[in-house]
Image 1 (tube, rainbow, N blue to C red):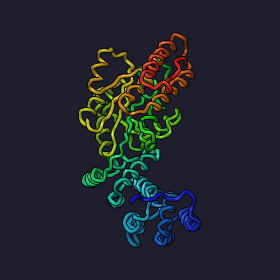
Image 2 (image 1 turned 45 degrees about the horizontal axis):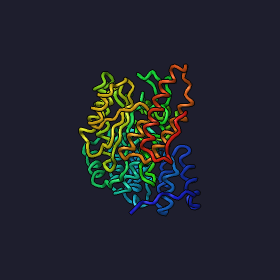
Image 3 (image 1 turned 180 degrees about the vertical axis):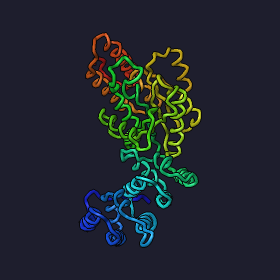
Image 4 (image 1 turned 135 degrees about the vertical axis):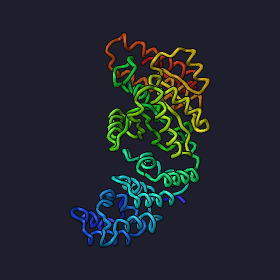
Length: 412
């Protein structure tokens, strides 16, 4: 049975309860305030409780409720209420908000047990929705962070991952994993484009892979960036990366960061990315995977290892060639499942051939690439022309794969 989401319009009876809880949280929350908050939540109807958890500042609420050496254990009582007694009344958005709140600060033993009840009490397609909802919050506190960093108990982690595997319902969709530098924008070895240029068509390519090849679009929001940039305990790198991506047009994504110990050497960088991928695959066994990287920093090795270790779930490896790989080497890599491309029009052609995009989606990538290319401020005609010719060559190739009604004009 699907867990219904909270309604768009607030239930009128929720507002006075919400106001009172917020007032009691506004200043010092003593034991009388805590007891009254517990009474309000315990006495709420199922629909009211579900909506209250979506509207309240749950990290602040969990921080305000205390367990005392002498006196009531109100925080424990709150966790028991929400994750045991009344969990069945909570929809996926409320469960995601609660899981995210339990990640903030130190995740102690009682918090981990509350998380255990929450996750084990969510099943089937609702579990997929919960995982995606937690990742869709657009913050450092995402699903990977929860399972592999916030939860310290190895046995508990394995129990939850076993539950995830047992409850996986195949979606028929893919999670798109992507590098950033020289894949999303020019920022390392690629001197063809002005520095920090977002590659023409890349945003549409992500969107079309996310949409899928069928007439009905798949669930949006399945893009994750796997970067060599080292993470940190406070999530400052991940949050800054998400802001930088959003400023360049990619508004929804998750970030899996690297580590300081894996910054030296392409092979070490690739192995850290692989470690992140294998962990991420355990979180989403109901999905296939596509990787988009570049030829400048270990991504070819990473893609080959993905195919080696997870051939049943890795559907394609796309590598943006920024080091002029010889054609013979490209062909040999393609035989092994690693496809090099020069422009995102060319990537769309490969994705169309592999059934990851429909003809309409591939055409939309080409149209977006031509429009974005026209707006790039190249410093000279000599710098622009080789890039233009690459785009035009790939448009011509894509046109050979498209029906006449969808073919793209070849004059940017």
